[in-house]
Image (cartoon, rainbow, N blue to C red; front, side, top):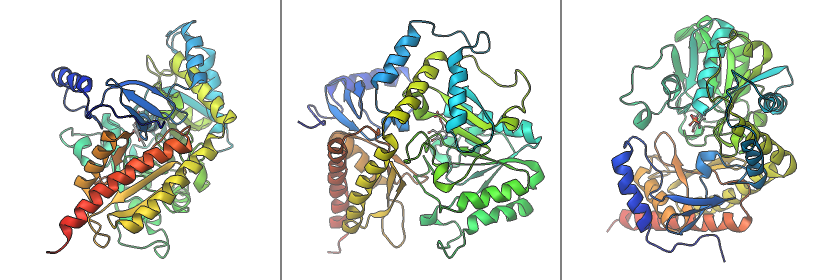
Length: 453
Ligand SMILES: Cc1ncc(COP(=O)(O)O)c(C=O)c1O
């Protein structure tokens, strides 16, 4: 018997009843990728309140790389539960915070002395990375990229690119943020082609310092090593090296936002490793806590020490349960072949997706790194107009047939895969079969409609 079991129309009656209560109690600004309410989750599957069972390709938006409720993570949390829940690290600190910082300093890219600060969320970590970069350089500015997503707090919204639904209506944002094109080769902002472009988008940073903002005014360039919400875009290998060289010549720091690309997702613990780069500051979150809220800012020791005593912190930041869970997550990465598995799952996806691309021209691009994989859907291969409605229909078909997955992209036309790295081949194939059926239903309906009479 497979993992997927669909017993009711989706959403089922219990999910529907909860949705009604939700409409009265919760603001509409909080959206849901699916209409099903979860009852339980294990490894790479989850079950809803109506008893329907799904393969999970979303992993709580990339937070469950080691799998839902992994026993060693649960055991570490349980052990901590028996001792204390919260004392606040700023009042009476605890050893697990220090031990986790030591381990983060070891595993993040770069063999220089490092220090790590823990906070609660990806956005909070990015906020702190910017504070630290400003304190170290004494400069106000940050350069971020088109198609970037860095969070929903005010500073991180300023850094985030996509307007709707994230930014529209929430201005004004903090100032001194400048935006330049990312290496999104499928939709190059300069209409150039790699490799003949000579990675112009990276070299153009020099020009930005002449025509947009003086480098002496810029504390940091911040980038995701693989775009997350922006559509799983993987830049050419030399992109970040060129950027970082320019940054360092000008005394500008490079911050890698590894919130979505980190913790094993791409087949390395950090996506930065694929490019051979050593960010001055590396930000992690999501899968770090194995399902509990935790984020880290790790950086060169002298940079991290720039803010004075009391300049960093937060009541719940680096709480003991999350630290215990993260230590267990790191142990799992050491003990199990999760990085190898990320590559295997990614290859399994790529093989199927390349076949689909040959069958259906709506699949404009297949791309990814390790287990961070996606397809971009377009109206036509030539003009590449985003297939937005069709993407929505595919996501809906999938959850109605037992697969939870998410879209992404500045144009909301990318289907992404964030499957827990513990998924079996059979579970991966079950999920891919549903996605294939969804593509067939949507692409072939479109082909029929599009044919001339
Ligand atoms: C690359 C990246 N940075 C930052 C964030 C914000 O993280 P959080 O939602 O934990 O605040 C996200 C969330 O999806 C992300 O993908």
